[in-house]
Image (cartoon, rainbow over all chains, first blue to last red; front, side):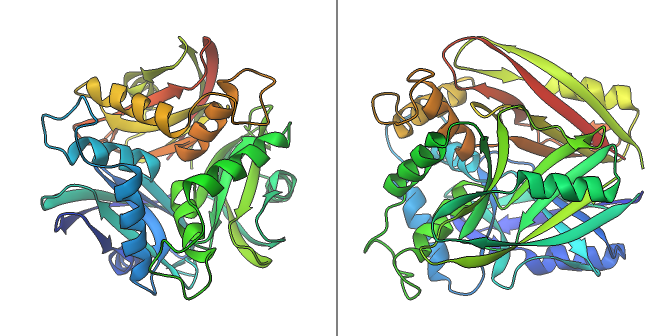
Length: 137
Length: 137
Length: 137
C-alpha cells in the first residue's frame, strides 16, 4: 500500500469559503494514484470542510446566512476570551466537518458534477489554515 | 492493497430515508474482504448519508420533523431558482454527511446492533442518487 | 497493506465529553504504523464523536449548552419510549459524527495543537460505548 501525504496551507480572508477542489485534484494527479481514497484533514477547530454546490455562489451565501442565524455571535458564551466570533466558530465546526473523504477512480476524485470541496473559515480575521491531504492506494 | 469500488444507484421517492445497509453488506461480501475499511460517498449536494437507529421507524420521522423545523422551506433564501426545497436540501446535507466510513471485521461491517445506514433524500421529487462504495483492504 | 483493529470500551458518566486522544495515540504507537490513516467508528446512535479544542474546558460547556437549546428534551418527539433524552440524543448524533479520521505521520496523529478527540455522551445515564479504532498502513 502506498500512502501519499501533503500539507496544504490555505490563506483565508476572514469569514469565507475557499474552493480547494483543483488544489486537491492536482495532488491526486501528482501522486499518480489511479484507484484509491483521498482523505482531507483540517488541523483546526474554528474552520471546517464542506462539500457543496460549485455552480451558483448564492448557495454559499445562503449557507453563511443560515449559519450566522443558527449560531449567532454575541454575549451567549462562557468562552469569550478570544473574541465574539471564536466560540460560534467552534460550534459551526462541530456541525460541519473536520475531515472529508473522496474515493479516487481512474486518477480522479469521484465528485459529482455539482460538488466542490470548500474550506469554510469561521473567524473574522484572516488565518493560514493547514490541511493534510492523505491519499492511500 | 486492494481497492474494490462499485457504484450504487438509489431511486428515492421524494423526501425519505432509504436503508442501504443490506446493499452495502452485499458488496462487502462480494469483495471477499475480511478486514478493511468501507467508505461510502454520495455524489450529490441535496441528499446525504446518516447512520441511525434501525429499529423504531418513529426515530426517522422525528429526525425529519426536526430538520423541517430547523431548516424550513420558504422565502428565506437567495438561491431559489430550483424550487423552495433546494436550498434547504443543501443546508441539510451540510449538517449531516456526504461520506460515511465503517470498518470491516471478519467479513462484516462493524455496525452496532441498532445502526443502519441511510440515504436521506432532501428534495420533494424522486431522484436517482449515485453512491460510490469503496472498500480498501 | 496492514489493517490494525482494536475495540475500545469507553465508560461514560451521563451527558459528558470524554477525551480519548491519548488512548487513540497509544493504539497508534502499539500498531507500529508510521504513515497511515486512523479511522474511529462509534457503534452507537445516541453518542457521537467530535474533534474540538482541548485547552479551555469552557468550550465544551458552551457546546453542551448550545446543543441543549438546539435539540431540546421534552414532549416534542414521537419516539419517547426510552425516555425524554433518547430522541434528542439521536438527533445530536446525526448533527455531529459517528466516525472520525486522522492521518498518521511519523508515527503520530496529525492533530493540530488545539485539537482533541472526544466521545460525546448524549444520554443522561452512564453507558459503556464501543469504539472501533481502525488503522490502515
